[in-house]
Image (cartoon, rainbow, N blue to C red):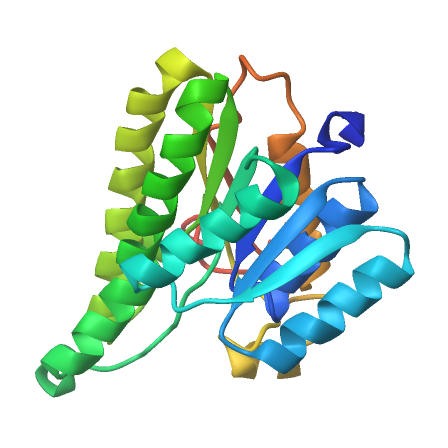
Length: 244
């Protein structure tokens, strides 16, 4: 697939200061896109902007609480003020918690649902407001294999990813008349800060963030009338597919 279609496009990436989000931001910049990076950590964003600009790319970093309406509105305002529009949104911000249901507090539940699901709604709402008038756009929601097969003791995380799957489907229906392609990418085990134990796994088992980012870039490098609706990367040896 030719990534030239990404040249000059404006990509907003949430959770961009590490892991999959960082790899996506760097990948889009390398492909010639203009990148708007959202995360909580200013120093990480500043370092990434410097790295992208040193390589000849264009990027801004916007400190953003993606669960806040005002912060999300500011993120997209800054994107439009700097680059004129938004063509691609990667809803990557997320948290992972493994807490048995009997021990999960309402606060913990709300944190996971807010970060993993509500943030995608808020960002997608702003993106739709920009993409509808221009007649095209792409949104990729980063899900999980937990949206297909839950892991134990993770009711909030599982519910957030199943909910994200439903949101993706609904937005894909609502966006198709306007060439807004809404997709879901479900990664398996990836060596990131959200799953610190995965960093210690064998190199031939855990996926690296760039592995995932490369696939996401290809999902968004299609003509505007096409939607790569869903993708999943899992480990060959993960007992996800069934009996061994």
